[in-house]
Each structure stands twice: as C-alpha cells, then as structure tokens.
Length: 287
Image 1: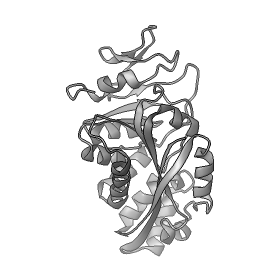
Image 2: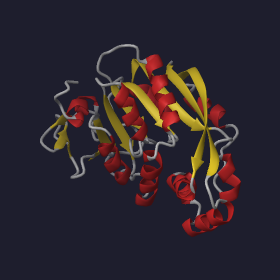
Image 3: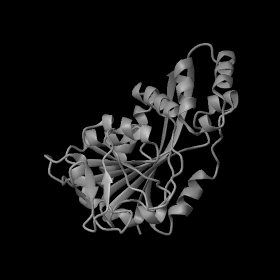
C-alpha cells in the first residue's frame, strides 16, 4: 500500500465486487472489476458496494451523526479511544503497512485515533449511513469509506484485513473471520450494564443486557477465539448540552422523543453532572 496512493486506490485490490466477488481496481472516480462491474465514487468520496437487488438497513440519521460529531469531538471518549489503540498495539507487532477495517465506523473517530498511531496503515470505514461516512472521510486523510451493510457479506476479499474494529456496532462473526488475515485480530468495544447508569433511568435510555458479553462470545465463538479483555472505566463531567448530544447519538435516539429528553434534562440536570463510562474492550483472533 504505497503512501502516494489515495486510501481508496490503495485499498481497492482488497475489496470485493458485490456482484461477482472479483477484486476491484481504481478507475477514474470509480471502482471496477475485470468483469466490467463498476461502482461510482460519490461526490463526497465514498463508494456504495451493495449486492444487486439487496436493500440496506437504514443507518444513523443526520441528527444522530451531528450529535456524535459534537460529543466525540469534545474528547469525552478519548480514554476509550486510547484503550482501543493500546489493544491494537498489543496484537500488531510489525511495522509493515496494514489495512484496518472499522465495522460500523460512524464518524470515524476511533479509526482516526488508530491511524494516528499507525502511520503506515490505511483505514476502511464501513457504515450504512452516508452522512456518517462523509464525516469519517474528514476524520483522517488515510480513511476510505464504503457504504454497505455489515450484517450482510462484507465487501472485502478473503484474508485481507490485518485488523477489524467494532465499537458499539453490529458484527457478523463468520464474515469477520473470513476477511481477517491469518494473523489478524478483531477488537470489540461493548458497553457494560453500568455504562451511563446515571442517565439511563432519569432519561429513559435503553438498558444494556447483563448477558451482552456472554452473547458476544457465543456469537463469535465458532469463528473467532477470545484472546484478552480490558474493562475501561472513566468519569465524564457533562453539561446539559453534552448530555443531550450523548443521548441523541446512540440507539436510544431511535426510541426517545427529543422534546421529552429536553424536558427531562431540564428537570433532572440543570448543571454539570458526573456520568460514568463502563466499556469492555475485547480482542479475538481467527480460530
């Protein structure tokens, strides 16, 4: 992956045509396979790689993406980004160029943090929100963005990803195992039941299943073996606007009325509040 290439041109041979499975190549504002299938690069810079006739699940809205950009851009989750980067360093021990794939990358915040520490690598942001991918492309100059559904077949060739990252997003265990190189690893960040507990009851946010980690391992077990984990805990001092952005950027936004959240915020939090983050960062390798 020569540094002179654009991220998309550098990563194109690792991508897979969603029509026939052949490798793709950069071709003047498009990606093409040798069988003639072509996929235009959008004006904003991302490429849609979708199987023919397949509908994609709706991704995060413009409002959710804007809230995420506001909250993450303020550095509140920087300890989590540091923990994910540390987990990556623990399993990536060579200096060669690497392909890092972020499954459900959102605005690219965590992928950009990884690339900042891995200067010879390129990042591939996969997401079903075009709005999020536009932000991801701005997050770091070595990010390429693909519009796809991570629940379906991933648009990468076999054994081409040196690392996959999954932060608070859906995951497809068999497909992740397929795209990982023989020495590749998956890093997953999932919230624990204590995550944001000060806000859950007060604002009616979705609760985290107590068996989430067990279900994660069970889902990945046939294809990916557990290596290590780290429980990341830190406190954040948040004002009402930051709390509102935090609620609006996550899955609770699909179930809560924005006006109701503002009323609850005004009633419960009229000043800064200490909110606890509790996240499990786990590493897996191919079986």
